Length: 246
Image (cartoon, rainbow, N blue to C red; front, top):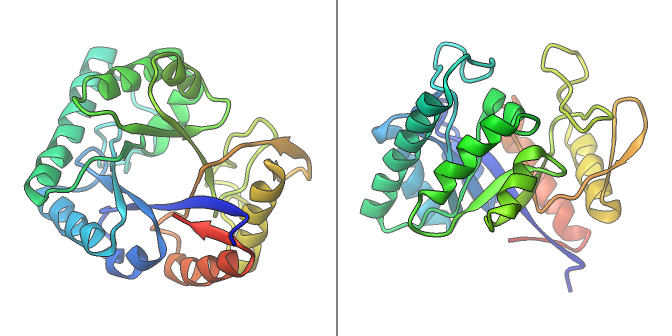
């Protein structure tokens, strides 16, 4: 009998074309919907794969900034950001409707995700986008973040997310990709990182500290050089250690 149940998610539809290899090992996915990557063709292809493998589908909206892949903070008014995010989510929702697949969640991408974790105005825009959707959807957000608190107050289902392949600072922010220790490279290290969080609800940071961190879903980045290998080996190790992926 499984001691723990977790969700494993991946960011997909970002132009790498490895979704068919990722889908058998994840339980939810976040599909780029035009902000940093993605178009109707790519969304439809990934939705069909998710449907085939019974993977829950979420929207992965971003700052409208394909040039920087949504990884740089963007100066944009709240009104323009709201309009862009709503358009992105609606574009995926239209494809999902045609394919008879429900929208399960929304997960902001890159710099938008990081900004919403600490900035009230940005978080409020995303919360308003979620509230504008006719059906209830979950919001994938960091533990103890500004957006998590705001969403909870608005009775939006919050799913706490942690990153399987990224290291953390003591303030629970991710180590910058510009730093050499940002990305966790091996399956063994990724497993240790996740399993420690599952068992203790704490994360070991780059300084060696243990900080409180709750997570319901763990993200393996689809653009990690070893993403497929990590997911194959990670899911096997989790199951051996009585962790069910659902």
